[in-house]
Image (tube, rainbow, N blue to C red; front, side, top):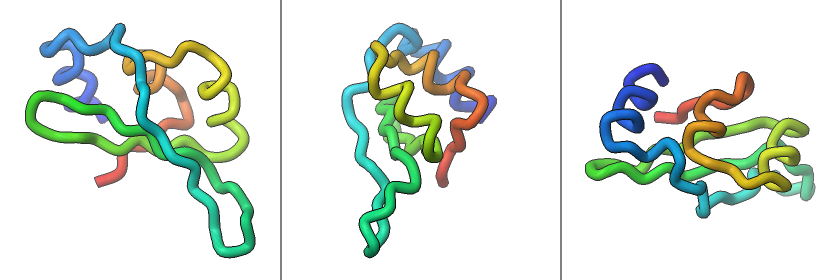
Length: 77
């Protein structure tokens, strides 16, 4: 996660809004969180935020920096 933070800072993406996300829903229609996509020059990173924390992120103006600094955010490989 630290390397992604440095990359976002280097490419000046911190204030860019996060526009792509999807909910993580199982076969019983239970929502387990949200998956946010952060695009850099060379790769798209997937950041997972579990339930119920993702709800507050979706209702606010979410930037890359706010997403990455969220205490529940997890970088998926």
